[in-house]
Length: 298
Image 1 (cartoon, rainbow, N blue to C red):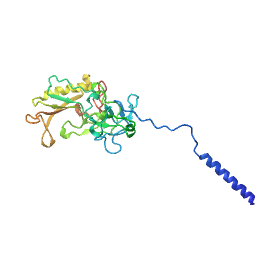
Image 2: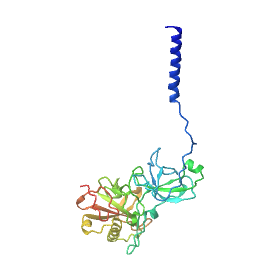
Image 3: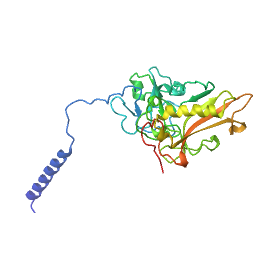
Image 4: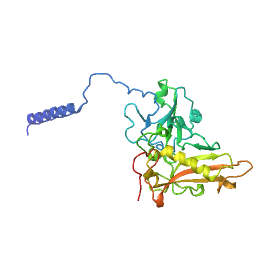
């Protein structure tokens, strides 16, 4: 092959390489880059879209930030891990936010005492943790603190629905229920209410007067069950058994049956629960059941 032919081939190869590389070079796009908008502060009812157990540990003990969904815009329709139950527009830091019981958000009003002046029933516990602005939000001047309620004992469980105003006629998400294989505090083994269980505990009370009788506690518990389950059908009630247990704590923290009659700590506590007649098990919460069918396991 002559020099002229070699020269032609070299030149053609260089042109092809130039064309190929020019085709893979990034093209310029008109316009300017814009930073992602900084999320605003949450509102009551907004929900946690990521588990509080991600990143190691739970959210208790320190204020943390999470990806949130907006309840107002339908962002909480899917499964979530908790919800904002308190909001303070001037935030503290760490665990000094002051998160406490979420009774106001839950819609809890104490049962009218009537004849039961010394029996004080309480709303069920939830795990309430402090949340705060992310670094970007703080840099943008946001200074707020919030408290989120998570399923008690199972802070990594997701759920649908809301606990807002559940004590005012709402339907409790099963993740927040307090279900067990026994009412006995010494054998209390909490299970998820979505799993088979023999008892659902609807409330726990302090009993100040050691003179309160078992009949007093039974009648008071029955009123609690009516209020919280919303069940009015006599045929449905006939399939359920309202149960109570009074106890006091002795040395070592073990629960002893009955109330302490005198001395420091006179009185004790009572637990109010529901079981199925004939030992049948549930696979859901009875809280706010109303006219819905009982969630039987068998």
